[in-house]
Structure formats: C-alpha cells, structure tokens
Amino acid sequence: LVRHDQPRVGGRLDDARPTMSHGVMAWRGAVRAVSSTTASTSSFAGVTRRVGVGGAAKCGGGGARRMAIHARDPGDEERVTSTDNATVKHFAKLVKSKAHRDANGSVVVAGAGLLEEIYANGGVEDARVVFLGEAAETPRGMRARRVVRAPEHVLKKAAGLQSVDRVDVVAELATPPLDGIEALGAVASTATRLLALDGIQDPGNLGTLTRTALALGWDAVALLPGTCDPFNDKALRAARGGVFRLPLARLTWEELETFTTSRGLVRYCAEPTAPDAVGADVAVSSAAGVCLVLGSEGQGLSETALRTCRPVAIPMPGEMESLNVGIAGGILMYLMRNER
Image (cartoon, rainbow, N blue to C red; front, side, top):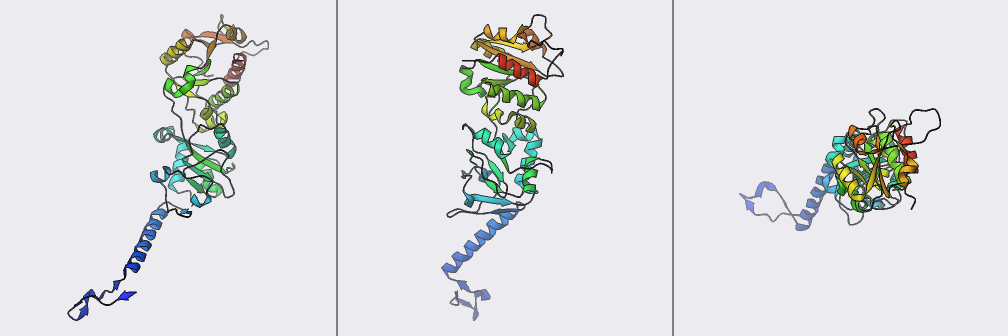
C-alpha cells in the first residue's frame, strides 16, 4: 500500500513521507468524512442515527426538518437518550412559550390518541419531528419528516409533562394560519354557524368550546381581541385536536362585523341578564345564519359585543343565576345548531 518511489532530496525520501496509492487515499478520505459526520452528530447531546440503505448520516437542525422522511421506515430513525438534546429543549420551550410557538409557527402535541384524532380526516401537514417511545408505533394517518426514538424520560421532557404522567408519542406540528378572514379558507364563503370568543382567557374553556363546536357541526371559530392562544397546551388537550380540524381565525371586531354582515349572519351574544334577551330556540328560527358571541366568566362580554349583538339566553327554570361559559356555550350551540 505504500510506495517508496518518491523523488529523493539529499539522498533521503522527501520529508521521509511515503506516498499512498489512489485507492488508499480515497479510502482515507472516506474515513475522514465519516469521522467528521460523527463529530458533528455528537454535538447534539445523546443523538445517534440509524441510516437505511442508500441513506446518509443526518443530524438535527433546519436541514433535517426539510427532509421528507417516511415516519414508518425504521431505517430513518434517530435515537436520543439525553434531555440536554437541542431538539428536546426546543420541544419543551414550545410547550411553555407562546412567543416561541409564534416564532417557529409550530406546536407540540403529545399522545397517540390525540394525534390520531388530528390526522383522522387528513388535511394536516406532516409532523416536523416525532419522538416515539421504545415500543411505540407512529399514530395512524400521521407522517413525519424526522423520526426520533427515545426513552420515556426524554419524551416527558419534550412534552413538558410531570413525572407521574405517561406518554408514548410527542410531535411538533406546524400551526395553521390564524390571522384574518383568509384563515377560514373555503368556509368563509359557506359558513352559516360561526362561534366568536370575546376575550376568553381560560384555555380549558377555549378548548372545550372548540371541541363542542366541531361536534355540533358549527363551521368555524372567530378569536376576538383578548382571547387566549388556541395552541396553548391546555387548550389543545381540551379541544382533542379540534383546533386543527375546525377553521379558526383571529379577527378584530370590525372584521367580524364586516364578515357577518356580508354573509347575512345575525350576531347574538350570550347575556342572560339582559331584559330583552330572547331564547336560543327563538333566535335560531329567525335567521338563516347566526354568529354566537361568548364572553369570559370573569370580565363578561365586551362593550362592543353588548352594543352590536342581540342578547340571547338559555331558559333556566331552576334556581341558578349563571353557568360556566363552557357549559352555557355548549347548550347554546346545541339549541342554535344547523339541522340541515
């Protein structure tokens, strides 16, 4: 493998360095390339990569996200064993920080059942990254660009869960656009039942109302000023994936008024104490389409809602002044649903 036909300088081989054949040089270059890749991969704490036939070693970062990897191909799985891994920390920050979610346009969703509900009817983008437990399978209907196998303590860190909770799948999904009427897509031209949330601050209530709207056949949800983030972890879980399956749009009051007027939707607001409040059954019979506005329990409806909407109430023969907004909204949506 070593040639000694190098030109001599002063009776010695030049620098006493042997010359390698082309084959050996190519082989050593390949070793250097692999060593370089290994060193790069090791910079991501606790990461290893299993590569299928014809594949190449790949590590975390933006380039890996853009690759179209089939989630069920075990040859394309990475393995992460440390909670200090950069992707794990990214997931944990997405769970806690709305600013980080907005900057990345993505959200963390934990649990195979929830992910299967989100992907049940199609129309949702491939997951950017999915962490799978040791024996977990990719949820039905779901695909991912990057697949990572990890032990349970890593999945819990990525999902932002407490030690008592269990999780088998954690994924990063792109969030759908929310700003303006355009976010409603094709529904904007066909909607007859629109739920509008006026300053709802409790993510559990927002999730419950979104889930109920989806179940009762309402067309979309408008998020008015002061309403919390629909991709908050608590809202996501309460909605059971409804925030991905039902069109949502952040609207100003001006945008809501313009849209409902153009669509011929009559605006009603839930205000049981108003002396001129009509029953929900009466309200639905007098309009081809309705927009139901619900306010928060703490602050109630905004002045704009009270000024621009007709009050509607639930007939309550029992001795109770009011109901939780999640429950009241569910009853109103049921009574005002479109039965076509």
